[in-house]
Image 1 (tube, one colour):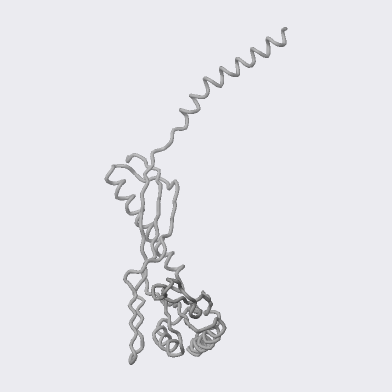
Image 2 (cartoon, rainbow, N blue to C red; image 1 turned 30 degrees about the vertical axis):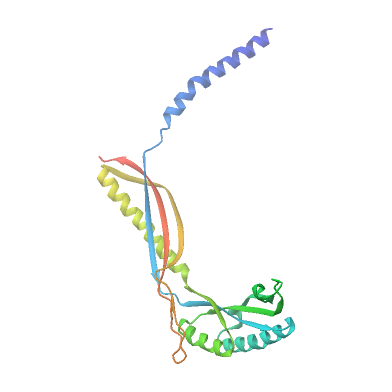
Length: 241
């Protein structure tokens, strides 16, 4: 009986201590005031790599004949690419398909489409590390038998240095805004509580221009690209003395 009463007394005393201590602990560690600022950074450079997707489309009465014709033309196209100084590691097959070709059903007495042949499409993606070779290369592959150019994109070989530059610019812009806001608000910037950054990727500033002429090498213009970054800095602020 005495032991049970002692245990109840101990539990009650511990509960009272916890109840009275909790508000005291909560009041002893107030959160310092903070200032959150955002900054954007941009780095611009001209691309030095072109990525071209091109191919050969062949049609014949049978799938075998279509494949044979396509293989012959595609072999000549790849030879033209390698002869232009493009390494084999920068040439990759990006699509190959064989599909039937149908007649126009509106011209059939029974309204049915008939298989009239087969179409083979074979395309490769070529990375051109010397942008000046892009136009002459397109001329060579078209002369060799390529009859489809589906796209051209541009890239920057050393984009990591450009991303670093954009990130530094974003952080510098955030710090500039922090000093300006602190001065206007009549407070002093304290230690940095946190820094977060993110990258926005590469964005073309203006469109690529392509034109094909028989007597002049195809002009290819890469324009410029922007690498963007964002920064968020949280400062602890203090009253000015």
